Image 1: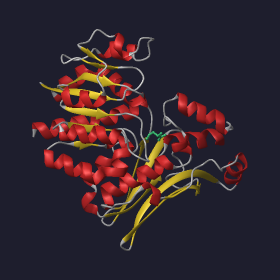
Image 2 (image 1 turned 90 degrees about the horizontal axis):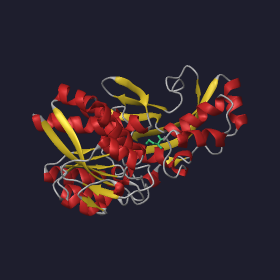
Image 3 (image 1 turned 90 degrees about the vertical axis):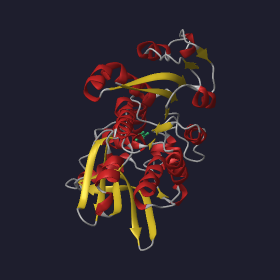
Image 4 (image 1 turned 30 degrees about the vertical axis):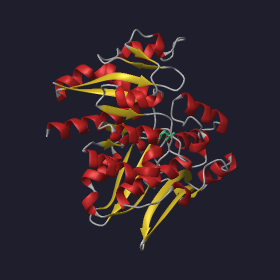
Length: 345
Ligand code: HSE
């Protein structure tokens, strides 16, 4: 049995969702894949930081994070270490970066990822900032150190769209991608079609753990712009930045707009798109009215979908969960299992 020791930087929805998966499925993972993932360190901004070289108890960790004393009420070897110290000095072999995304500076996640790779640790992250703003640099650093950089959770949560593109479609000639890439806004639009107000639908999306820490990123289209840049970085080899994406969110859509689309047999969706046009890339995020028969029109709630347009296969579309605690937590597990397959050879 191979054991991987993990340090979690951030322990919000995604980190907790991942810990819940490990708590519930460790025996199955051990039996089916001969692998054990052991969380040895967790760092949070407001709920404390803990490290125990022998491993942390998952059930205790999950109760403590929401209890009055926070994580530091746990009986562990070390408390209060800052993220960089945990990254450099803990015995973790893999750093799981799941702190909140900042699409303007990518920090502090960018420093965490750099420090981890420089310290010779593998990195798995669902944080969009470093992957949107510094993917080329980080991928080169990972290659130079012989470490992996897993980023599946940055687009479409645990639905394995990046792995599909990287491992199975990269030779097919991807020249355009378009899809629904934000669970929060798709949930809001679906709820508004069903008669809910914008405010109530947004509050519900926050309660369900779909929204970013600051939901402006979702509703104004910044989150999708970041994901479009990630897709461009991974599949079109581009130096696109989020600021270059022609972006509009859903905040200007009114209940009347939604009713008018419905009366015309159409539906509003927030569509992210990036394509090669000559030697250039064109990228956009726009609320778009789609006929109900369009493949993306049927994607509802927090669902996401992405269509790859390729030279050899035409269009290939993948649909599935795009946000949510366990749904994104699963992306972390997917990247860890890929690391395990690679290590085992
Ligand atoms: N806030 C994001 C969304 C989370 O709603 O899609 C997943 O990236």
